[in-house]
Image (tube, rainbow, N blue to C red; front, side, top):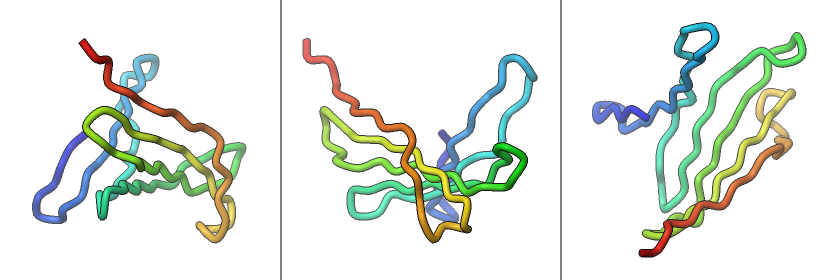
Length: 89
C-alpha cells in the first residue's frame, strides 16, 4: 500500500513472484469510513473493471470485498469477501 498525499489517494499493489513483476495498482480513497479502489484488468480475453471496498472499519475489524464489472462499472458482481478481526491478547 502506498499513499500519495498530493492526490489523497492510495495505491494497492500486488507483486507476482512467478513473473517477478509488480502488477498495475488499484487506486482509490477512504471517505466517511469506506475505502473504494479501482483498476482495469484483462480477464477471460476481455477488459473488466475491478473494485475493492473496505467497510465497517473499526480498531478491531473491517470488511473487504472484491467485485468485477464487465459493463464499464454500471453493474458489479461481488466474487470474494473477507471479514478481518484483530486478535485480542
